[in-house]
Length: 111
Image (cartoon, rainbow, N blue to C red; front, side):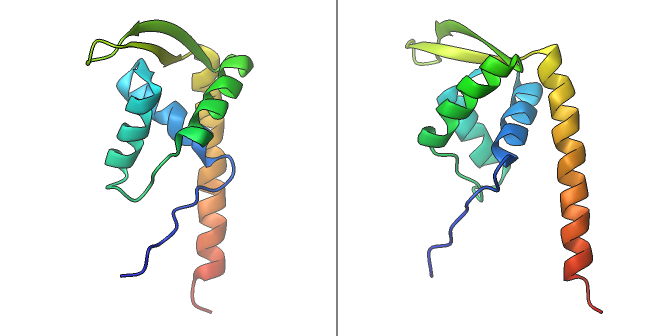
């Protein structure tokens, strides 16, 4: 079977991270990657090289807060949590995603 790419559209990572944190509560980077992969039935894989810059950017925007804690394996890890501002951004991201998918569906429908 041919290896299929699972590139994530620009901006979609923000939506996935904010939604996952809203659903799970505070989580570290590896946990976010695992949750997104698991919740997408292994169709989406977030690379750490994409995730950590995105988390940093979202933290700078005020959409996330970060605190240090211990992972389930007892290792020190940074845990990210969605803020009130992040919840508002999530609502905007979801609305934008719904508009995009509606538009794509219109283009793909049979004539």
